[in-house]
Every structure is written in C-alpha cells, then in structure tokens.
Length: 113
Image 1 (cartoon, rainbow, N blue to C red):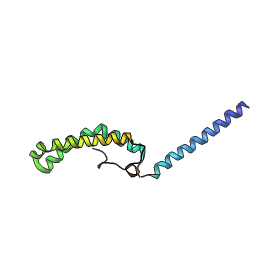
Image 2: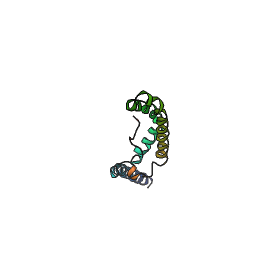
Image 3: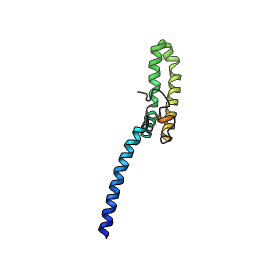
C-alpha cells in the first residue's frame, strides 16, 4: 500500500510539472511582453540610468555644439537619469501587473544602451 502511494504521488507530481512547464511557455506567447521582461527592464534601467547623463551630453554636443553640450546637456542628462531610474523602480515594483498594456515599456528607448 505504501509503495502505491509513493508511486501515485510521483506520477501526479511529474504530470503536474510537465503541465506547469507547458503553461509557462504558452503564457509567454500570449502577450506582447511578459512580466519577466518587465522585471529585467526595470532592473536594467535602475542599474544603468546614470548612463543617460553622458549619453545626453554627447547627443546635445552633436546637435547644438560645444556651448549647448556644456550648458544645457548636464541638466537634461540629470533629468533623464532621474526619470529612467524612477521608471525602472516602478517597473520592478509592478512587474506582475500588465500596465501599460501587455507589459509594454514606459519609456523609449527601452534601455539606455
């Protein structure tokens, strides 16, 4: 009797594990994005948000020359750095909630680099 119970539970556990794996892969195909991508994007944006500062200095220098790169770009870079970091924290906290629709990115481009 004890052997039957052990075998029965092993079979049920194996079947449920296989069904669970199929559901995970099927779940990822149902959405444009998924919660794991949203979580990863949030972590990446928190970790690399500082990259907006030098990126903005380079872009503004190319657009408006050296004066614009020195006077305007640091403020724009700091604002973008804070914005990307805050959005990254938001995405980490709410990664299970499909907002915006279908886990789409809140900010474009999705990542700094």
